[in-house]
Length: 228
Image (cartoon, rainbow, N blue to C red; front, side, top):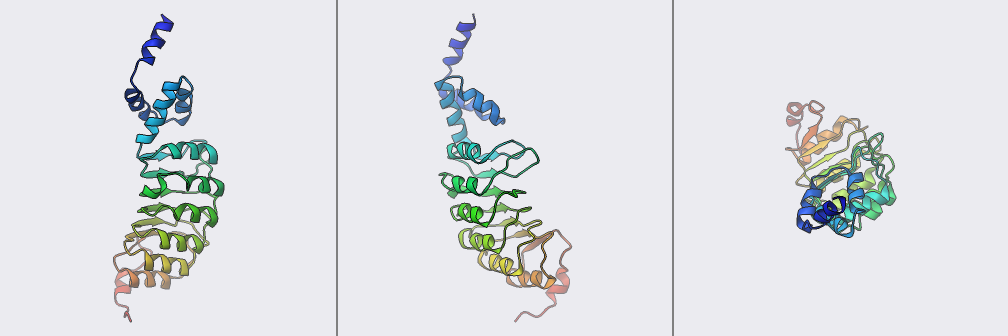
């Protein structure tokens, strides 16, 4: 009976297998499924190719395992590789590898939240290919203005960016970013070591820009300042 049941499972079409595998969120389970047979391995690959969202937050992934999955996700639009205590711990090497994936140029959202193992080098490599990016979260990292210059040059469609706790970012980086990313609607600057005058300058460039958290800037007061 056991052999017969296995035979029936093997008769499932690839499309149905792929659909079933899209419902599995645990990457460990997907890895185990891909080792069952050649057909199941193909089903797992096709399921990844259909996904438009991937989140590695909370999963114990490294550079190589993350890259292997992302490179198979041809339809990917949203990528979350935020770091958690026991979760994904990406490095610059991983960002270099991810930059080679075909889906990167089509991504609309990337989160690198809390990825303390990355630097400007890796971010620049990834961002330079993410030309369709609309939402970027690089809060809690050690990036500097150099990364913001790369974002400003490559991500003209950017609408929101989170720079929460990026203490190495300065006024210069923020001004260049807002000046070049004309579609930018919201920027989270909590914890940045920049003077209030910097936010005044940002709103002078883009009056509709939402500076978060709310209450950091007195908009009514700024609206009374003369613009030259």
